[in-house]
Length: 155
Image (cartoon, rainbow, N blue to C red; front, side):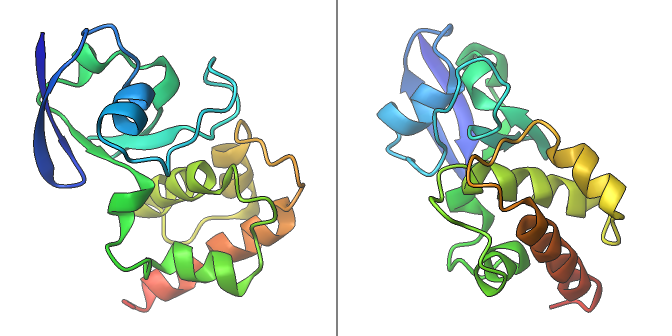
């Protein structure tokens, strides 16, 4: 079956089973490996992408349900890696192993799209189901706040 969707601003027509998880279509068919497989049950957040601007866990979304929708992966957040979150992540040394980082950043980007002045509680609520096994939660929170400041300044 042919599924049409837009990924990172580019329209794709994929000849895949409509039941295929979006995660595997992104990674295995389109070669966008920034989105990670973590738990496979939408609990860890490593596979978070945006579907029509909403943060979603791609491991549990069937590709047939995103036909005609816009999907943004970590690769599409910024062509140059200069999104305020990506820069703040590095400035605050948020990544350790890095495995969860794409999902953390995509969840944070969805938060900041709606709220450029999040409280600690807002950040914690947004990321409560995004697991960082290295435990860099305080640096992640600081990076999100720094990115929010940059976004409010229009940078």
